[in-house]
Image (cartoon, rainbow, N blue to C red):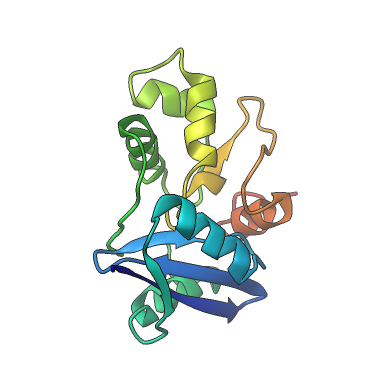
Length: 170
């Protein structure tokens, strides 16, 4: 049986549960998600794997996330181990190219991956991003500049964009 390791970080008014395989970070929960919600996600995406708490093994992941949430880090250097379709992987890689403190639209991402007419599919792939914050889906906004959906909730999206200085004037 393979293991998924988890820990939680409770820092800077954020409560997040992190899940990783031996290869890298696989999941970052929504703020204040319950362990039951995380366990359900793990069972769907890693059937038969055992979820084991291991704070020490995930210490490096938590350290970088805390540094980001405290405004001390602008990019992550973490190994990722995320499951998704080839299309999702392409979208998630495009998200990683959005610089800290900048935003782009769903159509911008669709154009970047060479699928300009696939804006809705891009939105669906962004919504399926399993590693919130680390793969910065919060940096994607509507073409008109409006804040749009976020698995972590709109309050969290606003908080992240304020942290990055994107919403400083609002």
